[in-house]
Length: 158
Ligand code: HEM
Ligand code: HEM
Image (tube, rainbow, N blue to C red):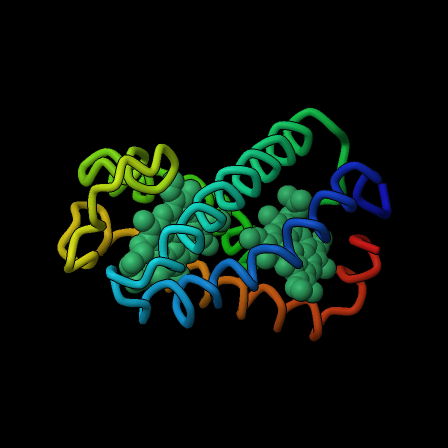
């Protein structure tokens, strides 16, 4: 087995291209936005919907990876991949903790007219969402550096 199966390659590159704007959008667009800004409701709606979609696709990829023959990865690269999958589970877990503890689904999706909490960072789960996003960013950095250094692994994902 010299390359990852087509389904894994397609999902990998599609999600890879979407995770980076999700992280950047979370920090540079959503986080600095005031809760009273009406655009924040739309920004959060897209953030949550795209987040759930991406996480679902990544979990489908994980199931496929467990069932299909694929090239073996060892050492640090393998641990980085496992840690990325763990982060991909923790992102929605902490995201949904925020949604349910502050009833964000009613505010953002049902648009019940209630205001967003003034201090979003005080919501249960916010700290863990941010901490997991930071860990995922560092892991993606390591992962990309590894792919640039070892061109053979890049060829397996092409
Ligand atoms: C692909 C997965 C996701 C990534 C990479 C991601 C990333 C981020 C980042 C970087 C932030 C800013 C963190 C901070 O303020 O410290 C953020 C905020 C947030 N995310 Fe996510 N997120 C993801 C999925 C989700 C999901 C599935 C939900 C909910 C169902 C969600 C709900 C939120 C909420 C409510 C905030 C707080 C916004 C604020 O501070 O005003 N996220 N996200
Ligand atoms: C543009 C940035 C990216 C590049 C250049 C890249 C490159 C690669 C390469 C070359 C491999 C094969 C590694 C091997 O065979 O050992 C791989 C596998 C993998 N990558 Fe990426 N990647 C990127 C973004 C991401 C992102 C954003 C994630 C997750 C959030 C991710 C998660 C994974 C995982 C889990 C694997 C293992 C194979 C699998 O389960 O599908 N990658 N990547």
